[in-house]
Amino acid sequence: MRLTAVVILLFGVGACGVVSSLVTWRMVDEVNQKLPEGERFESRGWHLAKRLRLHGEYDRLYPGGHRRRQLRYLFVAMFALLVGAAVLLGLFS
Image (spheres, rainbow, N blue to C red):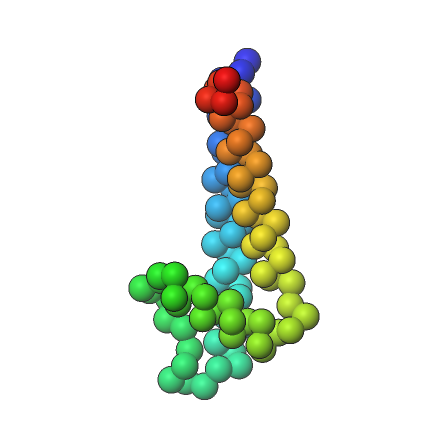
């Protein structure tokens, strides 16, 4: 029973990751619509500096935007699901 719960929690982590990717790509599309041609984000070559630039541009262009909040909620959910799986596996005892 415990192993089944761990598998379900880990599937939840994966689902949050997929949804997080979709939210990020929507954010890229929204930002790219407002940026000039030479400053738009390309779909390949993602790294920390590029992600931070995306977040900065999103905040500048959409001050009341909700995508960053969605990503924070998804991150918290992924972390909580991972901690729950670790507890069920006995990694903290």
